[in-house]
Length: 217
Image (tube, rainbow, N blue to C red):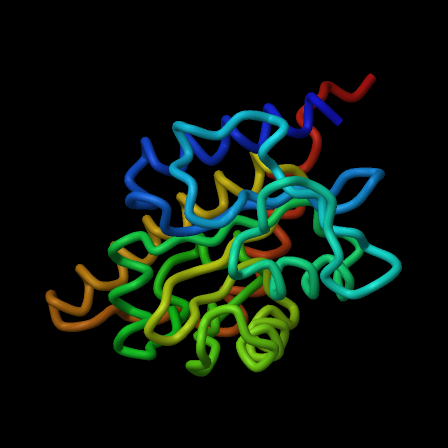
């Protein structure tokens, strides 16, 4: 458990260092054998210590947690993602500039680049607006993540998931890069979108190229 706690804090600080979060914005979580570790509310990432991370229970009373600090105000969609998606091991939510700009325009990310396959296909959806921390927002997020590993949230920011906190953070950074590239292409007249067949081919290629990297005997 201590290893999970230190890894989550390291990812939170890396998210800030990479410019994906400002101040106390955004939040991160990871699945453990005991429950869900999540960053606490309103505490700067550089001040976090392992014992400050709340542990949300996956069973028992919904939203119950252990710890002296209350979980992030966005705990609900974190917990609901884990409950709905057993394959998810970590969740990263950020307010990075390009993802957030698209979310403010309520635009999804279309098949503008083959890296769309990184997130399960095209488009990367933008969930409808709802007040942060609410069950309504969580329901919107779950729908936007259907067959996807990331999404935008209208007038809010973005979510990326992964099997580990390191993988989820990498996905969050790649999503921000894709959002930046898409916005730049709009300024150049708009992207030429990939066809469904081209996206499907990219998805197949991703499953082969980005699988375990080990020499076959």
